[in-house]
Figure 1 (cartoon, rainbow, N blue to C red):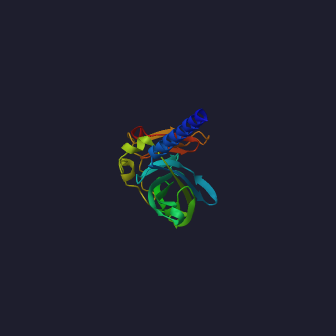
Figure 2: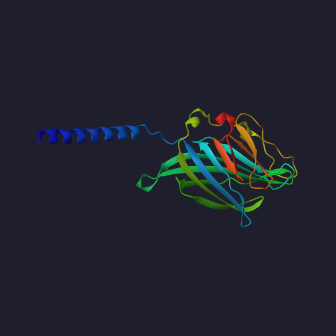
Figure 3: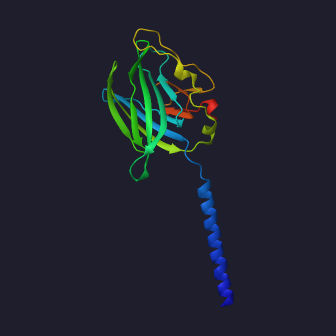
Length: 215
């Protein structure tokens, strides 16, 4: 009986130790500091751009999908996502601010500047009408942790401060390349090129790239 009792005590002690280790790991789990943004822009009933960003909380980023041989049909999408308040049952919300532009006859035309408030991990959408016609935008922001994002400085992307032409036929303004930008060819056979600035990572048209400054 005594041996059995000691054995049970040892097993119980082992279980308590394991529970303690599990609790310690749970307590050390890193809090989310980035959002994975899944964005879709629809125009004329067709999806014209579906970029995915990984952005630090409150840090603006931009992706451009373009054809260097054409002066129309490119899209430039700027996005900033920041944690909002708590909804029912304590569910987190996120505010997503965007600027959606289309290249028309050699100029960047601002289609709209939508702002959405959504539950984390759930899609939200809205329809807008601007100089370039009506369009629909939807976005889903999923919180994650990215260790490299701890060193990202909000607003450090020079490409976001470049003036853009809002009316054709003013000349198109290019993206200023730097350590906070990366460029890659699209892998979907479209022949387009994607440029990403200010994000931890951007994915679009079958390709992804991560700016050197993001880690």
